[in-house]
Image (cartoon, rainbow, N blue to C red; front, side, top):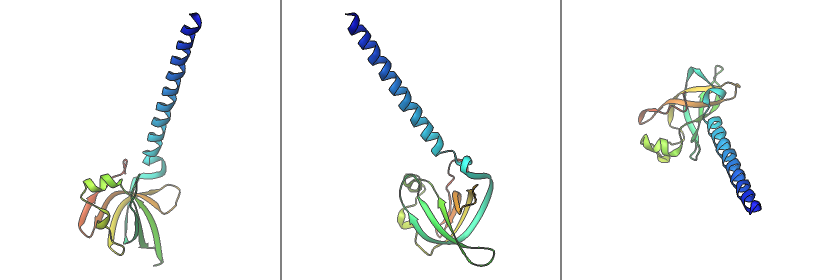
Length: 137
């Protein structure tokens, strides 16, 4: 009888420990995924003007590849992270809303590490302006 009681307590303790680890891991992952200010300069909005060269329409975020002109007139490519597919759909945008060659103006927060990576604050498409704030940008 004592053995059964201990076994039940041990199973309960192990089950509770596993649940706490899983919940803690999920919260850390969620927090890390949405901490935009850790990777992007959210205090400085930058405007990128150029043309869409490609789109990666997938979760967790849709990525637009824009080609802009640098100070020397040469082409500069940017990866611009937007909302997820469902978020864009709620804004009335579908994959067919984006065509390579379309002119775009993107107001973004750029990466702190100097790479050509950014997250959207707002986007002006050929169909008009769209608020696409991602995680505080």
